[in-house]
Image (cartoon, rainbow, N blue to C red; front, top):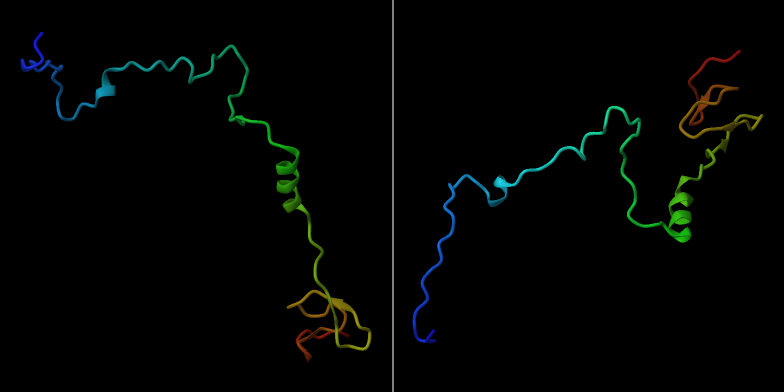
Length: 101
């Protein structure tokens, strides 16, 4: 074939404008639904093993924190959770809000 001869265009199969090129593919759903005789649960699994460092770094955020407490201004100095009235004397921010005998 001479290199100066123009090439003839090759024909492509016609397809409608709405149809995507992958719409003719058949997808099997056999792998997606579990066999009713098999009692296995399909679940996500990690692709790679998580290193000890990353595991410990993630678990370090799970730690519980102690509740902050402050002493009540009453003479007993009862320990009180912030923004709550004292359970013994009923004081909150230096004023009586709960009547205690």
